[in-house]
Length: 100
Image 1 (tube, helix red, strand yellow):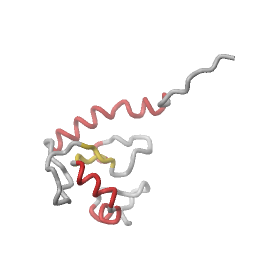
Image 2: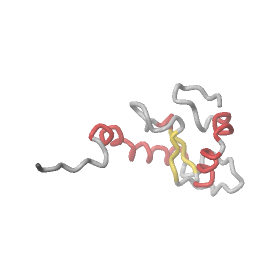
Image 3: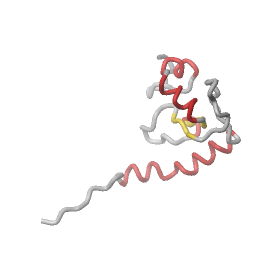
Image 4: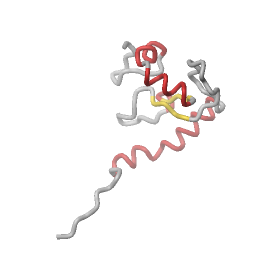
């Protein structure tokens, strides 16, 4: 019996994520390449990472309203301190609420 290889990414996810490069570029342009969070004294000022505010699930996770450009230290802070992130709006619950 011949075995078929498992795909690393499903076709469905590949289609969903196909617009991510253009969304990423639009976030960089919106922020002029600067960190949109600037919450950390270690902020590098220039954004290098894209943060998904409501996560990467759902039908359109890469819409601009769900994305923030941030530097590595600020991105780490967002995930290390979720209560602060919910309070500041850098993270929201997937049901749309911001309460922690």
